[in-house]
Length: 118
Image (tube, rainbow, N blue to C red):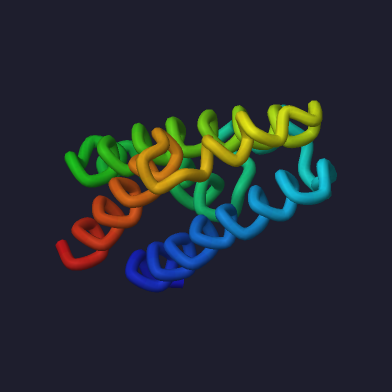
């Protein structure tokens, strides 16, 4: 799959996390564990990202996307942890438009789109 296709697929896949996290907040359950969500190299995009050559990993786009992607996973894991622990209010607050997760999600999408166009 081309870089462009991988990035487009990742944008959609990471957008689905809002739905998954909202479901976890509402039900207190998830098919995912906090430990698995926290790491950025276990999702399809993360596996692809880390499989790139050392030269590709030196690009400004790769570095920015990798950084935002890692932070996205940490924030998603925090929300999931709160949801699974029954801290519904804290978990729901993590999904607010002004939350760190929402900001990271928007910034990650923007960075991936810029990389895709480059």
